[in-house]
Length: 113
Image 1 (cartoon, rainbow, N blue to C red):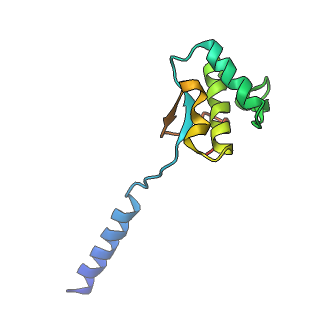
Image 2: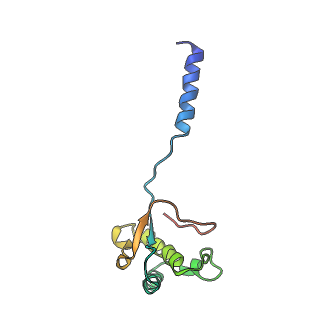
Image 3: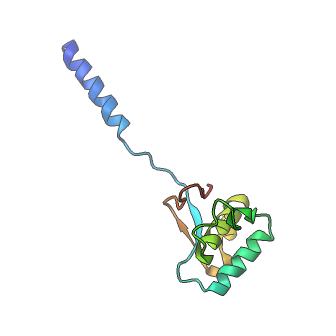
């Protein structure tokens, strides 16, 4: 094989490898969209009284906006799940949760994994 052809194949391989998407197994615990406001508030109260730093969803916090119960509950439910061993039981919340596999972070509000 000529050195030019070998160089071409090496460069082609490097380009192809660089563009292969990396698959991760990251997951986030989120509130289900059809969850009642009462259950969302109960989830917030539970997570915030069990070790989650809820200052992020308070006025002035980086996750205060959007200011909805759904978004606030999702943030603290994920924080609880991540900080309690990422086990199935830490994302139950009375069957009002689900896992998502696309990062729900928005702007400066980062949902940790």
